[in-house]
Image 1 (cartoon, helix red, strand yellow):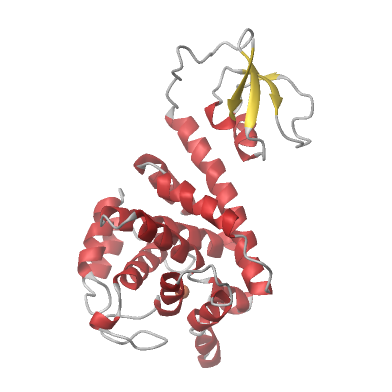
Image 2: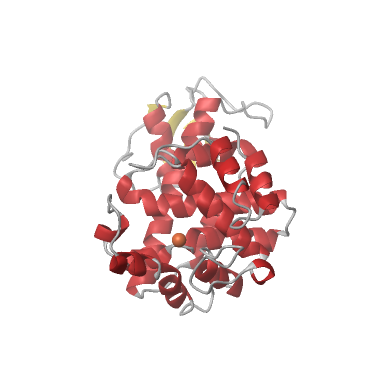
Length: 301
Ligand SMILES: [Fe+2]
């Protein structure tokens, strides 16, 4: 019997009659779904539905229930979603820089994917972004910060609209860096004074790019401009301090620093979650201690 199911419901052992998309990878192929590659390819495809043959397939959905995903399948699904999210984010960030139209629908989809991810899925997301490739590092950092900010906002019981703004702000906070040359962004040795000044201009550059788009909420603009401020006023670009730094910006500074500290980077080593949080906790003149503690409690090492 042929059954049409949403692609998110595919499981190993099902016999696939058709993947409803024009992707050449599937063509008119009919196959037993037993390889991870096929599973990921279907999830990554633009198809929304898959037709399965429950007469041939050994694993069938019975009584409306479905077999729970194995850990490997959950991981594969999270990896596929992450690849799609990074791709969508990359396209939109580049669009913002080159002055194209911002496709909020694309970004909203990513925000929803992240905001609705259950705890296990979002820690998988976080795990996967730690194995980032150099050329994708900025996009994956942006996504990771968006995920972290969303998780922290949820843990703080902020309303869903604010959590969505946090995810979006995390994804867009470093867009100004895309206007700087790779020589500066990927330089291994110390920066010259001029290079350092340029690098430190990325919050204003990002803010300038984002404010041209009326759909970007003010909170997101604020995070972009101030995510390098510090509680003691030693940050940039405004040197704001203490109570002048709002909660969303504080969340951003903590999540941004945390992701940088826990990501393997040449010359900087790989800090464990506990090391990162205690390093930040000891610097209460820079970071909001309460937020550091909440974030540390959220992430398993
Ligand atoms: Fe930044």
